[in-house]
Length: 180
Image 1 (cartoon, one colour):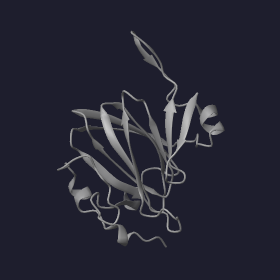
Image 2 (tube, rainbow, N blue to C red):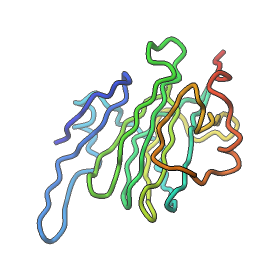
Image 3 (tube, one colour):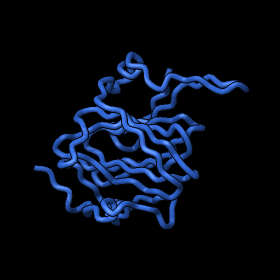
Image 4 (cartoon, rainbow, N blue to C red):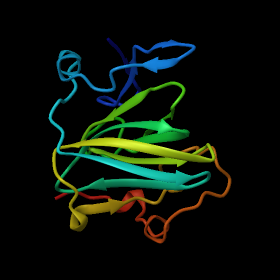
């Protein structure tokens, strides 16, 4: 059984699974297609991705266009601050963001549908981050990166000096995001 929580961004959902734990450890279903379908979430995913990053690493804000992807994300070790940014052209919340902590301790997941940019930063010494991808396979030619520190979006990252890749450091401004 999952608890599905609406966020301020239409379509972005925080998912809290039911966790069974005792002094031996814990158990929970990280994905159940019947339960996710009943909650209105997608159940057809094309690939699973796994990244490991060190404290202070910031990845994002990424999306693909026109081969949009949805992402079901979670941290399986460590702790991250995860962010979705609404980039849908006709959305009343275009340019707004939502952020939440995903960690091995809280077991939360975030569903980020197509039409959103995504990024995260690592708050623990190290974090393993998993995401199930729907819509389209990874298409390098369609990948777009918005600057993580774009002032028009104003994400309040909980880091003072994040470590970003060259590609992420050269992302475009939010105002340059256009769809044909």
